[in-house]
Image (tube, rainbow, N blue to C red):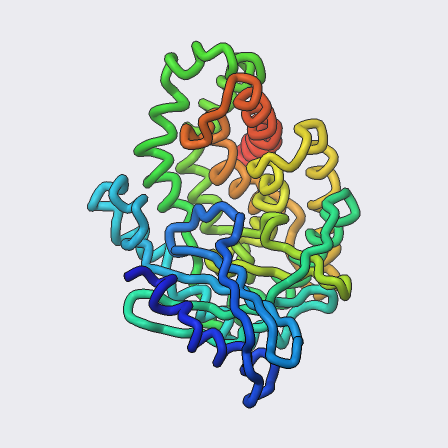
Length: 369
């Protein structure tokens, strides 16, 4: 039986509803469990569910259930060479997110930033269910939203420098080397350096020879950038701060969800996913990428300054550049074949990815000298 049928049973849902409402005697009249429309691409997430219903007295209730699994349980593991399993499991530890939610982090985040309330954490066999507050997202991702998100991410990292994170939260560093020397080197880099890929007229319509040449330079500098990253100053990072994981609740607070990748990371590294997220998901215009990139760095630095964190601008820019380049730029010419897009849709997807990659490449090449 799957985790959905064993851990999201109605008896347990009734118990969690009573916990969430702080009404031990509440009687649940109806329950509906619906899969989230969000595409799951994290190996440690089995499934996401909206859980809702009413009480006998007519009171509506809603929960969000996230089912976690070890990365080894993901179908993707079949494509990972055995000698890379250990490093992947260490860097994608399925226990990291429950550890964050069980910590005191939620009680010491900057004003304007919150985390979803955790009603319960169930551990049953090789699955963990996080029973979370349901957030009504009101976010509109214009430049002011990006500015505010970058500022709050800067304050979060500034408030939690690396030493404090290790001492109070027990969260480790997450080395980008596992990605570069793992999936990228084994799968993506051979594809993006193959002449056959660049004969594709759809790709060539949005990426010229100059882009290919600069991408090749970035790939060659990859080991240098990984070494640079390790020497940068680190603080607490969300690790996957895409706009889809930064919800705006009705009270106006930014709610950071999905802490699967929470880690001690280089200051500025969260800006990579903040900039790339909506482009990867197809929710932004390529023309917007430079405007977004132009505002996030200063806003993040302002956030650090608000926490009196003394971090050099060049170090923050390097943290941003390296993460954007390694996590987004190298794979930009590749569109997931499972999407089954026609040429027009594939060109649009590539244009979004290339626009972000261009920013990452330029920043990273500048940092590497």
